[in-house]
Length: 195
Ligand code: GDP
Image: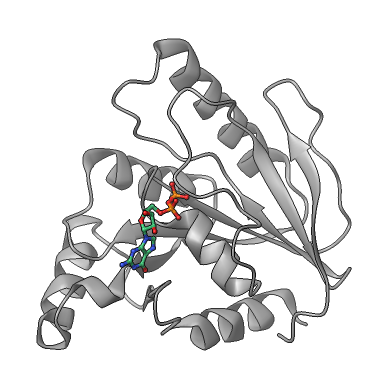
């Protein structure tokens, strides 16, 4: 994908009506700090379109980034703030549930996992949840630059077994620092959206 144009088009809060964009969407989920904003900024070649290091307690929104007027990257609110109130956690669940349930245009859900650590219980729940909603989660293993190349396979295997991933399910390693993995992610998105 050659990025010619990108804009944050739609921001949905808890009570917003979700848009029917009529164009292919791919969504990104993951716990806070996993590198989701950095990934989206890297995919669209911008430094700070998606807000990085978002603070706990801030408004939880679903952000739709319009790419070349033909598709959307959808930034789902991050989970796993230890300090988030029960109310925020409940809102978070409702929003994502509603989006996964109602979007007519959603082609794939990417789940971001920090490549350094075994997926958390929340990560495991998220993976199951996406599956239950009828999607085949594609894992992006973030912060690739933080591990030694010789350790890569070991880390990928730990993610695969901890999430009990379906055989044939993809894990794509990515580094926001070096942009390694960016082309592979776009290639996959292009295939999924038919663009
Ligand atoms: P988000 O909360 O999931 O949106 O995470 P951010 O994109 O804000 O990233 C959280 C922190 O991890 C920030 O300090 C980023 O600079 C850092 N980070 C994100 N991706 C990478 C990466 O690939 N490599 C390294 N070294 N740091 C990263």
